[in-house]
Length: 103
Image (cartoon, rainbow, N blue to C red):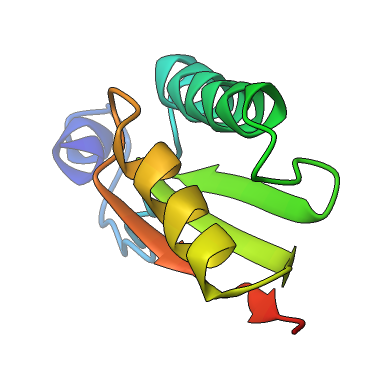
């Protein structure tokens, strides 16, 4: 449309448009960021309240509802329990558990 408007200006004999349209990837909304932060807090809280899990040795990151866990687990049972706690939180789409078992 800009090119058409320019042509309509009195005295303009020609228009050479060098405009480019750049589409940037959609950023995350504030609501999405808050939702992920809420999920992370709820997972951490669940780990803190259960004595069979260590919230201090478990790193929790949430991105678009996907919870990514890392850190150390004392055994396979703890790793599985952390996965279950994270999966049970409302808003979690999936869980990726990258925790290392230190037996």
